[in-house]
Image (tube, rainbow, N blue to C red; front, side):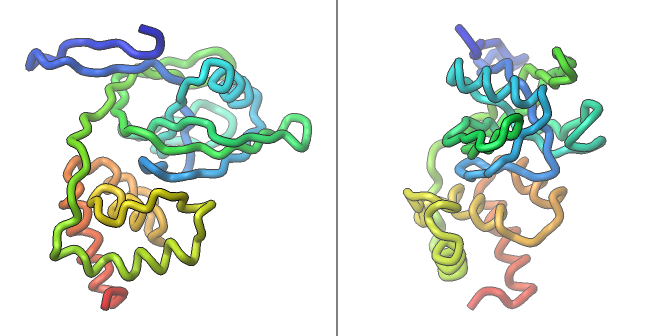
Amino acid sequence: MGWFDFVRSPAGNAVETLRIPLFPLNTVLFPGTVLPLKIFEQRYLDMAAACLKENSPFGVCLIEKGSEVGAVAEPHAVGTLASIGSWEMEQLGILMITAHGGRRFRIIETRNGPDKLLEASVELLAETGPTPLPPERQRLLPLLRRIVDDLGKERLPEPHRFEEAEWVGYRITEVLPIQNLAKQKLLELDDPLSRLEILEKYLDQRKLLG
């Protein structure tokens, strides 16, 4: 099945799993995010080359212990698939890419591959389909629309799905000036409505909503 496998959970349900290289970072990638990355370590240059050749994803996880360079870092268990959009290498040995956030996943197990590249078997987290933005959360939209206008379409490309709870929650969370660990906790939430409730309370406390 290529990159994908299907296994059975203890409850008997089919679980979609994936074998991917991991790119632990000091940032949180959300579904739908466009993240510019500068790659210079050989292990990640090789990873990117393989992903481009095979049209396959890699995983982005927030670092729990360790650093981005050098020894293998320990990642948080929940991360996001990333596919490479544009890329360029204006300087030999330095690759600039845009990573596009896809589905969330949970790490099942990891192993150290060649050249200290962390590889993992991951379980793709279930998708419930688009959840409509509830009427009581519409007050989040004026702020988000201003953010979208300020950052532009390159940073927040279309389509802009202001009517979807997931999209609104992810877009607000990714730009908030909060600690990465708080963003990680919001990424891990399965319920998009709970994410919106937390965001609204946070923004209300800081008088950022009309």
